Length: 251
Image (cartoon, rainbow, N blue to C red; front, side):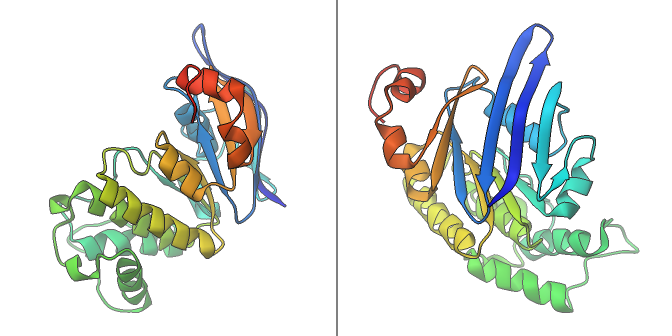
């Protein structure tokens, strides 16, 4: 059963065709990887999912509801969360506060920080935030200023900020970019744990070690078009994928 369906999606920027008749069906409770060379249209596709870009034609349906014309925060309220290429955290706030804020926003629809509305560290959201930090191995850094974290810890913090919202669909754009191999492996383990909870995940990633460690299915984009979609083992041997993605080298 699919949770996200993309039908005949097209997007151009002036004379540049970024997406051309893209069709995708993302199965519920699966990990679906989208790979392809730089400039293939992967991030453009994700931006069409979350309301940052409006496609020229085509449809994007999530859990039976069209996402076209809906604002990003409204899409988030439907149960879609996104992890960006560069970690987007509140660098001046503590690690715990970073996780509590999206928890409040998910519950209330919005949350504004100011002198009259500080982050209150009591109640069920505080308890849930601490549980999330324990899951990602950051509970010992709850009171640390988030901007002081390493890149790997910032990425895990951002994952906790997404998961605390109880998403149905988690979109990850290059989740291990710039990480050491040790941090990458820790992040893979964390994403595997999240997937086991039944969260559907769409992962854009260049690191094939990450892709083949996580994905149940892989779609390959090249020049804005899906050129292949299959199980990981079959994608590895597809000559079209090898040619488009690595110039004929084996994955």
